[in-house]
Each structure stands twice: as structure tokens, then as C-alpha cells.
Length: 563
Image (cartoon, rainbow, N blue to C red; front, side):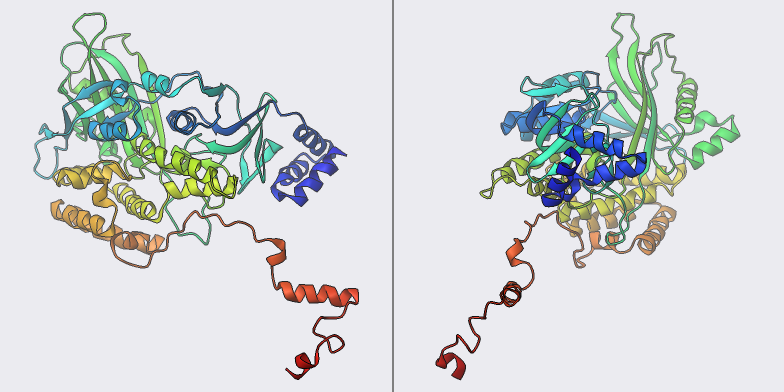
């Protein structure tokens, strides 16, 4: 009886309500399973909130904070690891961090662990550049204090639920196990523990490979490259004596390969599949022994498939040994295994769940930068949710979701992303010699041009230079002028190959061609009495009931007949 009641309600109001139950019955092959899910759906609700945020990393925590603290919504943060520390290290350009503080007013300066006045790079070994030639960038960099930022975003107004939403999307707005069901007024979530929640809005902040957001390729969408991957192995340790890297600067890129000069096989691999060293000096050792704390990370910028983490680890320690950097035995306090999916499709239109952060494809497709981009997007997304919530027509969850997505993926943002997607594909074609030439030219551009490309999101400093097709075209032309001729030729070749494979998105991003980008817009359902031809249907009903038409000869006036 409960199953029949649920199915009837689903047909009457929202078809998505009963589809997961039918899918489960087919999968389990028994009606008993279908009945269990139907009975579970009739179980009492344990809690109700305005907004349920799934995923308690930086993206979920920040959006939950803004919605609760600045917009007065009741919010819960759901994650089985909500009390665990955030695992990843985050490096930021200080200019971007300060701009975010001016925008969000979170006390972000207090959430920095270390700052450096300069950023160093090594691109030597090719194009006539000596191997040990230092390239210094006069732009400050910082390392985020993960614990402080996390603590800043966790306030008593946000309910923390250490539990899992164990489901995945099988089609837009359709989820397995009946664990996430939508209706006209909101959503019902059944967590792994059996706890049931009612939320008007659900936010997915579970990362780039979320199972709650639909980011599949579709024939009617523009083709985009498959996701690529940034892979890195890092250690935080104490170094005694020679540190090689300047303690007053953060080393962003060290693309040298001379540490493999005596090993031809590894040298060939390092030249064909490049990785670079990333080094953050963190200050004197805490024990006062005179050593230096440093975070070293060997990184593959972007590759498909991803480079082995074991290979990154081997290259990391081989490089440090060659440079004469001695890690104090037993001093490694943090070991990081970094996996960042980049690129791929953006979320499909029409989804009720609002994805945010990596789940919404905000990660920079060519660099892997995410934290500042996500934070820059957060206030507009929170404002879109809050504003649409208060619409005169009342709360429409689908309208709220569409507004949030449109705040993230406006046509302008999509065009800028198209340009960056090509950048990632081009970088993957270059060996270490090509990357040295590329980045040596890249950082010799005016700072605004290269900083704007790395930012890649509205309201971040210098991004305005890349928000129009004219700005991106200027960047591309000036970049070509800075490149070695053979790399410039590879760039032109890449443009042709990319356009042949993926169509016109790249060219549209740098020329005034007709806009093809979609908008995440919600349209209310058409009232039943306005579907089709209402007058024809009304006439059919009158005729079927035997009632005469008001314009039939029997009832029409002489004037009507004459007319």
C-alpha cells in the first residue's frame, strides 16, 4: 500500500520520485527491495534545513558559511570526514588573496602560514638558457594555513553531520537507492546511517569526480576534451645545511633535468614526460636545531593519462640528492599525494542539485588552480541563491539552482574556459624543452597578461584582461611574439588540430563570432489550461458532451449569421 501511494504521488507531482525505485527493483530483481525503499521513503523526517551542503572541504565549507552567516539560511554540512583536517596544501598569489579578503571580509590575512616576496623559476637547459639561470618574478606568493581557514569557516550556526549520502546520479536528477529524491518543494536525503533530512536546496561540493552532478558529454553540446590530470608527490621535512632554493622566495617551477644526466633511461623519460619541482621554505625547524622546514613537491602540470605518483616521488628525491639537499632522517611530517582532475564538461543544464567548486568544473583547466577561483565565485553563487529564494513567486528550487549555475557559468565565463581548455591541450603536447621555452616566454609578458590567464575568474586581479575576446586575442598575439619559432609553430599547429577535433569554441573565444554558449535559465512549467490550443480543446469537450457551440446557427443572432 505504501509503495502504491508513493508511486501515485510521484506520477501526480514529480516523476523523478518513483524512478529510482523502479531502477532498484530491476537491479535487485525482487519486489521486496522496491517495497523496502518505498517504506523508507515514508519514514519520519529527522531534521529539516534550508540548505544541505554535501562535502566539507574548502568549497562546501565556504558556501555553507556565506549562506548561513551572510544570508541567514539554516545550513547543514554533510561529510563522513567533516572533522578531519584538509589534506591538500594551497599556494596563492598574495594579490589574489588580498582581493578575496576585500570581497569576502573573512580575515584571510590571518589564514596565511607563510609569505614570500618573490617567486622563482628555473627554465634553463634549452634555448641558450644556462641550466642554473634563475628567473625571478617580482610577485608575492603565500601558503594558506589550512587549519585556520577551516576553523574560520566553521561556525556554530552551521550544523555538522558526519555521515555519507551514499548514492549516485544515473540520469539528470535521478539517483540510485532512493537516497536523494526531489519534489516540487525540495529534496529528501537518506544518509548511510538511515537518518533522513529534508532540505529545500542541495549543494554538491564533493569534488571534481562527484557522483551527484551530471557532467556527461552530450551530442547536442559542444565537444570538449576529456579531463586531464595534475599529479604530484610532496613532502614537508627539515633540511640540514644546503637548501639550494632561496629561503626568501617560493620556487614555482624548476623544470631542469640535469639530475638524470648519468641515467639515460630516466633522463629520456623526464624529457618526454616533464615534471617540475615546487618548493616552499617554511622557516626554521621548530626544535631550534638550525635546520629549515621546506615543503618540496614534484608535479606533473597536466597530462592524460596522469603520471605515476611513484615516478613523481622518485624524481623528487633524485632531484634533491643531485642538488645536495639533505633531508633530516625522520623529519618528514607531511606527505602529500595530489590528484587534481582538470577540464572536461561543465555541469549539464536543468539539474536540481547545485554543484560548486571542483564538482562544478571551477578548477582551472590548464594550471590546476582552484582555491582562489572557487572563493571568487562563492559570493555571486550565494547571492544568486539568496536572491532567487526571495522571488515574489515564492521558492522554486529549480529556479534557485538555475540562478546559481548561471552565476558560475555565464557565457563570458564559458568563453574564457574554452580558451584555457585549449591551453591545457597544447601544454600536453610539449616535452620539457617545449615547456621551458613556453614558460620563459609566458612570464616575460606584461604581468597583467600572464597573471590574468592564471587567475581565470571574474573579480580576481588582472582577469579583466582576459574577459573579452579582444583581451584573449591580444594575449595570444603577444605570447606568439615571445616564443621560440619552433614553439610558435607548434602553437599554430595546435590551433588547427584543436579546431578540427572540437569545432569552433576556441576561435569563438578570440574572434567576434556568433555566441553559442547556453544560459542556465529556468522556465516555469506551462499551466495545463494553456498547453496546445485551449479553444480547440474546449470546443471538443463541448461537442463530446452534446452541448451546442455558442456560435452554432441555433443560438447565433441574425447579426452573427449575417456576419
